[in-house]
Amino acid sequence: MSDALWQIELDAAPDTLALFEAALEPFCVSLSSHELTESLWRLQAVCIEPPGRAAAAVAVAIAAAAAGVAAPEVRIGRLETRDWVREGLLSLPVISVAGFYVRGSHLPPPRTPETIDLLVDAGLAFGTGHHPTTWGCLYAIDRITRQRRFTNALDMGCGSGVLALALAAKELRPVTAADNDPIAVRTTRDNARINGLSPLIRTLVAGSFDHRGLRGRGPYDLIVANILAKPLCGLAPGLVSSLTADGVVVLSGLLARSEREVLAAYRAQGLRLAWRIARQGWHTLVLRRSSPLRRTGAESP
Image (cartoon, rainbow, N blue to C red; front, top):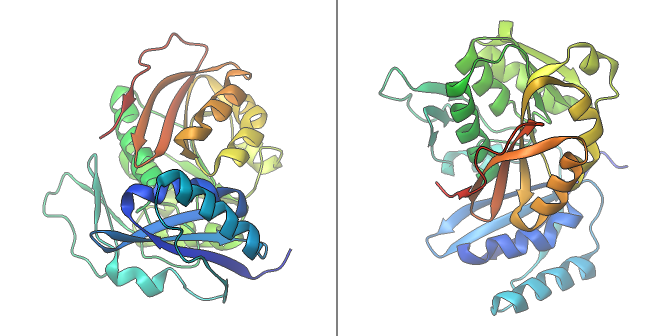
């Protein structure tokens, strides 16, 4: 595997993004989008291997045909090792959801003191808080922490650490943040320091629950994993074995069409769906161990 990253990029109308995201998901490890104009958004898929140009173009063309629109131009290029997210930082707005206020250093703090202010500048690690899946996780974190206290939480696949920071700031209890990317772990550690949360954030370079240190800090009463559908399915046995008897799991990073596959993997391990959040074609799932379903309807905040 090369150290270089590759990117697939296209511009499309906002109501077609979910279809194009689904088309590019098999090629990439991260998907993000941002607004260019009211009627045009830019979709970027980051890959760890050079994507096949023809295969990507065909996948996009099929999605365009399904949407009844012309296929957009597919641009593929190599990403140099630089702060490629930071280059677009000044265009990123505040993310305000469920009492959390995620902002870059170029933006002012919130005016209300009860709001949890999280300062997260973009960098080499994935995750600035602007993707619908991060929004869904923050919403879920707020809701479940209103229902009970958690004493040992895990952010699995932490990226820049947004969710770990939110958990630590909300619960004021230690949170473990793990990622298989050392840059992400270092970024999370830096963001914890910037936000005054270093004493509460414990970081690990770990990509699975086979990691000795990750298992040693368990079992966890809350596990949040915001990654793509296939890795979520692969993590299911180890994740559930690291969960307390009354633990709660928040899964995100999956398109609506992938929900059935992900739920099947976790139901096979004894978890049940409590409720879900649907936003812009992406789903966030809240699961509990062997408990009656409290809510089965979708929420679309």
